[in-house]
Image 1 (cartoon, rainbow, N blue to C red):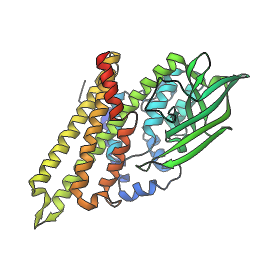
Image 2 (image 1 turned 30 degrees about the vertical axis):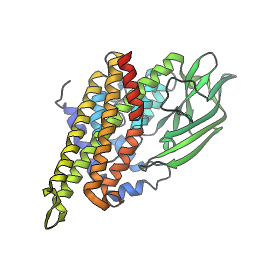
Image 3 (image 1 turned 90 degrees about the vertical axis):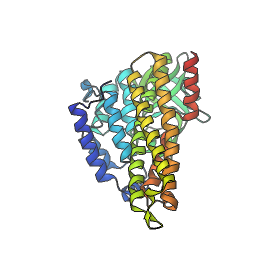
Image 4 (image 1 turned 180 degrees about the vertical axis):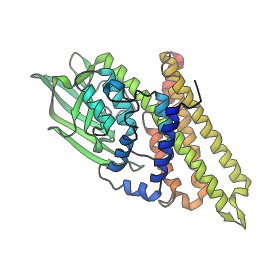
Length: 373
């Protein structure tokens, strides 16, 4: 793996650093929490203008055909700037499924994602799930004339309130788990939106006799399951990258605070106990970045090695983020839990990233199973 940045990667990082610095104020983060859809439309338009939304999209669909290394570097910067836009769900996860599945919707939706006009959310999770991917779905699809009729419900669908389209998983008779493209405003689709701990929004979806055309079917059976696993692995890598960026921002915040805040006539950074805490934070953050690089290196390799590397990265980041969050808040004292301090916003974001695309418990079990296999 080459650790030197290419010219494009350096330009990407420079543009991300500039924009995140402009948008990285506590007041702006607090304002975004009151947007009903959860989407900062102006920010999303800037993402599109800078080419970030087309980064992993293939060239034949209007994208830049970037690598997962490029995507990870950008998401580290997004994590530092506490970007809560639906980048991972739409640009990383859903775009991969649409590209690999092909079909009538591929070109139009990938082009829409690249331009910022389309935002696609995966609607797979159901009540009682524990990040299940290959278990049968309670949501069903049946043949209906020249199309399909979908009935059922989905639970805690990230970024659903701002989505223009959904990729919906449903059990299709004689075909197993199948993936369908559904427009957000389709008749028979009800959406109940609510905020998450980090200010992003999710929704529960209900399908009551929703009818889609035949070309809405993307994949079925083993192909659909394989696509879900592969796309979720990529999303997990992007989430780890955002977690690394957020933890690095926490380090910067805590280092600056320890130099400015005084107790007993001296900066609190002189106290050895706090020095030990920030060293632990530094080590944990660097371990997470190393685990991220390991996951990227294994992404296109042998299946079990890929699973082990990605799940290990998610576990390392999850445990490191808990340490960084605890120490970061403690260093700030009572201020650390208030809305007025950036550390509290990173705290909530890291909580959400640890749960996204498999939490610590899920990936420990997956890691163990991969070692046994």
